[in-house]
Image 1 (cartoon, rainbow, N blue to C red):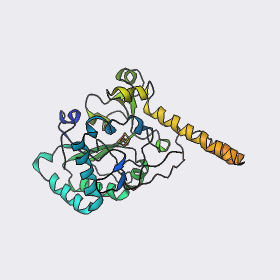
Image 2 (tube, rainbow, N blue to C red):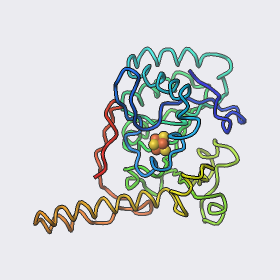
Image 3 (cartoon, helix red, strand yellow):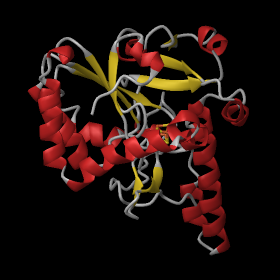
Image 4 (cartoon, rainbow, N blue to C red):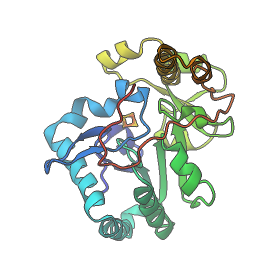
Length: 276
Ligand code: SF4
């Protein structure tokens, strides 16, 4: 179940586990959303284009998802068995080079696997800030490292103490931004060393054009602001001026922890949330 297909990870001997990115439909007709907290990231998601959409690759990722949906305990058992192999002792596993922790149960299954295999190092990028606050942060396994990646609907819940990754338009932009370090040398740098990690945009022309010179965190703040303006307009046109003013409060940025909650679904078989 664990592979070394991603060339950027393979050169460093990193194994990976993948789900299909964001929303789609399984061959049996069930719809899914493996990234319930995805926000602006879905507009520039490298895992929604290119080799990730090749039929064989997408089918393999969907099979992985199906295993976790149909028999989560059985899948966790198989994964623990696989990780007892000698090749995983001292190895690193990236959980998800596409997809995310789509539910509490799925995250907790991973936590049980990680605790049962202490000689393997696990790491992940995630936008599931609320799930991690609840299930991981109070008692994290010593062999798990994570970084919150910007571009999700809960970005405003991050605090200056969190390790955070942002997608920059290019390497030069990262190099000239104080306090941010590139993870280009090795993906594992994202979970060690300095806590602000810049990821240069993938070389996919139409996604680069969509991102322009903005960082992904900025794209998310723009999307949040546009949503608040639309909500305020709706409330104002309904005659509820006071609520409109309240709902147009600025979203807290990374350096000013906020308290808004968008109430994301955490069910992988729930279709992608519609953005108002
Ligand atoms: S969370 Fe990751 S995999 Fe999911 S849509 Fe966003 S960038 Fe893509």
